[in-house]
Amino acid sequence: MCIRDRYMGNQSLEAKNVNRSNLLRDKLIEFARDKQNVEFLIQWLDGQQLKGIELGANSRWACIVKIFQNKEIEQSTKDNYLQKEAERDRSDFGLRAKYRCETIVVSKDQRKTLWSSFLKSDGKESVKNVEARMSGFNDENHVDELQEYYELFFQNLVQIFENNHKEYALGFFRNLFPCDDNVERNLRKTQEILDSYKGDIQ
Image (cartoon, rainbow, N blue to C red; front, top):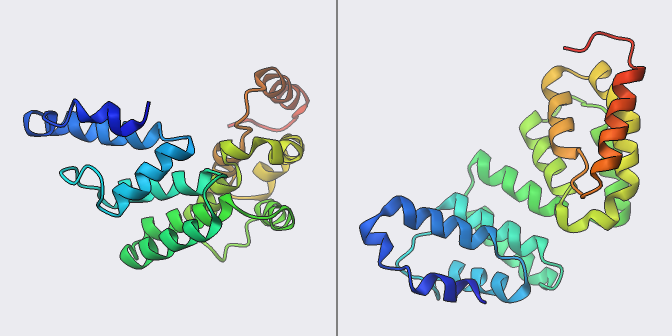
């Protein structure tokens, strides 16, 4: 069922309960995964759907992230909406959202370069900005392209905490921890690190 159809029977909720309406708005965006529903979000951004429901900056960026995550949407369409939103929202939040989107669609060679840059903070860019790129890099819709980096994540984790300041190391851990469903591997690798590490764990 299209997300638009799920919403139509609930439009009157906005007048009765703004919080519930906002929750519905957020869920409509969150559950938009296939091409049909992402195209609905594109129409919503263009003001062609659900005109009574305002899309604030956070919601607009959430829609654009969904556009970038969908592999069936043309890159030219993605670039068009990214450029328009970046011009509309020049805030720090907008800049980080832009970084995240750009990193979702990197090439194989660009991914290797990014990974190398994540292994050592050069202090030239804020941790928040780097975290935005890490988040886009580790996108759950690209797990097949990320498998080799999941092994590298565990191989480099101790060094990340030893060689970088705490804020950066925690950002690395939060944003690059494997997002696939291989729970057994993640538990095993984490336990191996804990068992072998000789330093103080804080």
